[in-house]
Length: 246
Image (cartoon, rainbow, N blue to C red; front, side, top):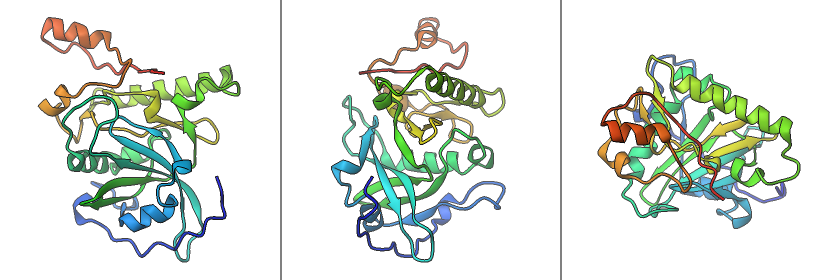
């Protein structure tokens, strides 16, 4: 990524009272940024800054430059009014609120494979979030590359398995519902991070809504237990199965 971009320093960010983290206030609160801030961080959302598409938007590489602080590389996700794969109704405001609530929980902020939230943008023309993550690429983009060998593959698989197990724990369990390779970003050391929570349910988010039930999953997503549950008209276990669409 080109470090020589002349991006103006971001204005002092505000904090939205509605998204203060629950519980331990020793954790930093996410800060509110403007559209102009996100444009500055991504060189006006330049196509060369784009990492890839998610089910509900886009992922970008960014450089966070703020007055009095050391510059750092980040990942920025913005939602789109039009879904990437299938026509469906989705409420971007709800997705943003749920993601903020989920990621600001102290036990979620401490997990090594859940993205750390720096801030967010909540304006009429744009909804987005900024993650403290220096991205290499999405797992979807890396999977077919020669330098993604067995050691890296095993490292990624084990880390994701531990994360899903953590989310499925008996108390306050979560169901991600669309664990897609396009929704997993690898950092510079091949550590994986899930970055899309648009269909998540459980825990602080609550039960699966009718809108989420009606939203198609990403191409290639297959949940054999989910099919069994539909046939039996009951949920017998939590399942999150990967999509590896090409």
